[in-house]
Image (cartoon, rainbow, N blue to C red):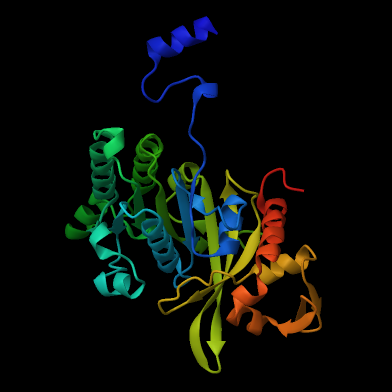
Amino acid sequence: MDLLNEIVKEIGSDYAKIASEETDTETYIDTGSYVFNGLVSGSLSDGGVSNNRITAIAGETSTGKTFFSLAVVKNFLDHNPKGYVLYFDTESAVNKDMLEDRKIDTKRVAHIEVVTIEEFRTKALKAIDIYLNKPIEERTPCLFVLDSLGMLSTEKEIRDALDDKQVRDMTKSQLVKGAFRMLTLKLGQANVPLIVTNHTYDVIGAYVPTKEMGGGSGLKYAASTIIYLSKSKEKVGTEVVGNIIKAKTVKSRLSKENKQVEIRLFYDERGLDKYYGLLDLAEKYEIVKKVGNRYEIDGKKVYAKEVYTNPEKYFTEEIMEQLEQAAKSEFSYGGT
């Protein structure tokens, strides 16, 4: 032990210590959806996306990637009254009105439009260095969002377009990989989480229909959690009011991979439905019983629509405790 302490003291820094002396514990940002929290962390009420890692949310167009990001932003700011967000926007996806409609404090959000991978890399690294150069007691919680990686260009691609060169840019994948290689450790040292949205595409020639993220392998290796989204429409009568989104863990260091849940996303200020998806989990673990098209809860048979219209009435504290244990079994490593 003396030799190990001597080595750490000689070669170490603020970020090197004996493992038994580390005090850091995994913390999370509530996503606004119980079942999505469970999917990415294994806990419904205390979980969410990691508070110091990279989380990728990928899907086809209009699957709600930006809305997911904004839900995380809102919950992060609500739970951290002195916190702030750097929102790197590559496709003019958000504006002041959109943020205010979702009750997001715009005074604590920096909206930064970026065009190239090099520009994002430079600005993000500068922001982290400014953060790390502050005394620890002055570092208020911070969240980075990149929306989206797939729309970032490169300086070479822009030069080629201006010169009317009809050539494919072969440098993009390496630039993405290099950017995330530099950012990953810096973000971890600063305890700053990064949410990255990205596009997916169908892999041509695959024996089984397969989705893949754009931008090469850089994000795939850097992200601790990768969630793929797909959707169907949610209607009231003939009016489309939102999406039912299927979310699947393609990669996760915090929960089981290849798990899938359904989440409801409203187009209005409600955003993510906090309770939607819990009935499926409750039925699977026999917390409630499904009889025909209804659910038997506390001796009464009710339709799912009624449950989700008055969730606090049916998802009592007792049922939520049972669901929390079910989520650990369903999503956590080592869960039984």
